[in-house]
Every structure is written in structure tokens, then in C-alpha cells.
Amino acid sequence: MNKQIEGFLGIGEGGRKSRIPARLDLIQSGTGLILGLFMWLHMLFVATILISQSAFDSIVHLLELRFISDSPFMSYITSFLAACVLIIFFVHAALGMRKMPINFRQWQIYRAHTARMKHEDTTLWWVQACTGFIMFFLGSAHLIIIVTNADKISADLSAQRVFSHFMWLFYLVLLFAVELHGSIGLYRLCVKWGWFEGKDAKESRKKLKKAKWFLSIFFLVLGLLSLAAFLKIGYNNYATGDWKTAQVLQINSDGVRV
Image (cartoon, rainbow, N blue to C red):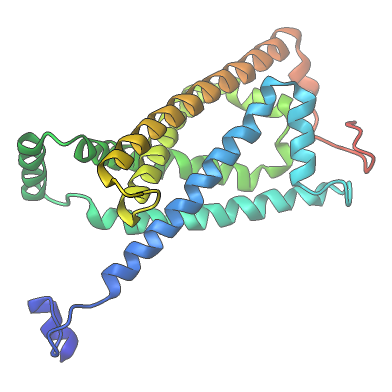
């Protein structure tokens, strides 16, 4: 009966509101923080391709713990980690959809609010919502590719995947969606929970916004340069026919690529 009353009135028998929405907000914030930090680490890992192909392959070797064993089954570590990220990603997306306008009337209210307030953070929320929608499809596809092809991660094979079948366009759209969504999300987390607020909240928000734009531009440029590097490697391998003989990355226990 208490749940029925709360369903109609929004409050329980004791006049108290449910704490479930607050708990869901906390879970959404936590999963968003994990994914945002993972995004930055992932971007730095991918950017090692700008150093050299060997540097990229060495990072793959390190993350798969191949210094412990050079067994090809060690690639399942990458599959497991990608699957964990995929689960967190789905949980975060499901919780995020609660706040999306779900009918025309809600869309009208949002548009009217945006037009009257002319508030930059409201616009940033809409950019975050749109990029989140894009990420739900492209991000899921990327993670599933990693889960099912973890044994095919190397500079040559990754470049082949990016270069062929217009996958570079897929990753280009995903790059902008991920970096914008992630940086806006982390900024909103800081504002929502009062992190780095200091004595002057308004001044702190300005500094956070500047930091957000700096990080957005930094990781977008880093991502574009990395994508260009993979395209160059893929094109060179295609032109010389090297990718016809490309092998799954094998690294001995002494760290030598074979």
C-alpha cells in the first residue's frame, strides 16, 4: 500500500520521499567518474602510437601481463577488462536516460527553459545528452569489438581495422562524442558535488569550465593525431602489401616482439 501511495503522491505514508532517486544519482555519478577517468587513461595509452609502433605494442604487452606468460590466452585479460567497462557503460547509460526528455511536452519545456535562461551549463547538458546517445551505439560497438578481438590488438592490426571499411569515420565520430561527453560530465560532477569549490563557488566554476575546455581540446587534438597515425600506418601497409601477412601480436617473456 505504501508503494501505491508513493506512486500517486510522490511521498510515502510518513510524508517522506523515497531515497532511491538519490541513490541512483550516486551510482550514475560513480560510474560516470570511473568511465571518465578510464577515457583519459585509454586516450593516453592509444596515443603511444605517436611515439612508435613498438611503444604501442609494448603497452599492449604490459597491460596483458605478457611479462608473466607469453601465452596467447593472456589476451583474455583485455577481453575481461573491456567486458567490465561495457557493463559499467550500460549501467551508466541506463541511469542517464532517466533525465532525458521522453515526450514532446518535455522537449518544449526544455527548449523554453534554454531560451529564457540562456545558461551555458544548460546547453552543455544538451550536448552531453546528444553525445551520450551517439556513444550508446558507437561505444557499445567499439567495446564489443575489443571483447571479441582482444587477440588482434597491435599497431599493425589496429591500423588495418581503422583504415579499412571506413572505420576511421566511425572512430572519428566516436572520438568527438567521447571526449565532449566525458569532459562535460566530469565538469558537471565537480559542480554537482562541490568538488574544488573553495571559498568562492562562482570563481571556482569559471576555473573548472576553463579546465574543461582545455582538457577537451587537448584530448581531441591527441585523439586526432593518434587517428591520423593509425591511418598512415594502415595506408603504408596497404600500399606495400604488408597487412596481408600481418600477424597477431606475439611477445616473448623477455619482451621481444615476434
